Image 1 (tube, rainbow over the protein chains, first blue to last red):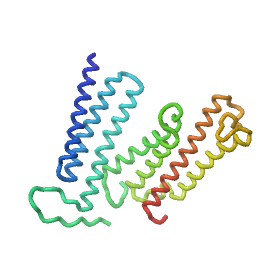
Image 2 (image 1 turned 90 degrees about the vertical axis):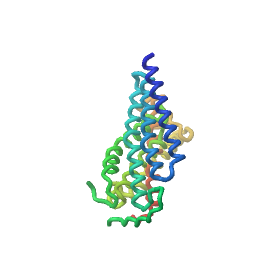
Image 3 (image 1 turned 30 degrees about the horizontal axis):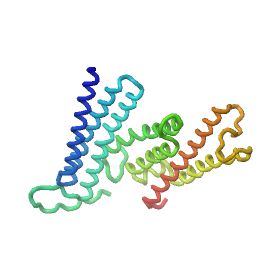
Image 4 (image 1 turned 180 degrees about the vertical axis):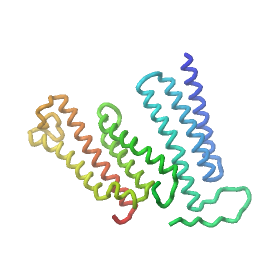
Length: 111
Length: 145
């Protein structure tokens, strides 16, 4: 019974964070803010949802598989976000600001 | 660390950590295909993804000697050969195409022989898909090799 309550709390928190990240993906002004929303809160949301599923499942073989998926998401999602944001910055995409600023020069690639 | 065009220590470390696990999971999907979800195609795609990830984060100049592009065609051809032989050899013994029950492996019995035939065909499909997908990636990147 206590395990069920813990699982419900974890999954509801995970769904909340996933909803927030989807909202941020829709509402934020530019690419970097959107990667911020997806990279952080979606990782947290999927981790909470998966750990809730693991608690709900109890001690089984499929719990171990869920934990492996959790570790993979925890490692891979921030790395992919980092790689995408870094590639965008290096190809010269300007971050969004409220004021108009002088456009920065495009970074030259080190050879 | 390997010197390359865009040095990012995070991407290099995480990719070199993840690639063996992706390959292990691909082998699990291939060999576990007739007990659970998965099979030859999915396992081959995962193997190809591990090689493509290596090419993406190392750059083709370093990654091509690690897995030469000329090998991909050989892998695809060997996979197709395994599949074709597993299909045609039962026809030589008087059964229909891909009838695993009459493969000429006399030391295994009926049901085990059928399971083994499924496994052989899955391995063939996996190798073929792996070679073909890496070959498609190499041709899309379009560097001379």
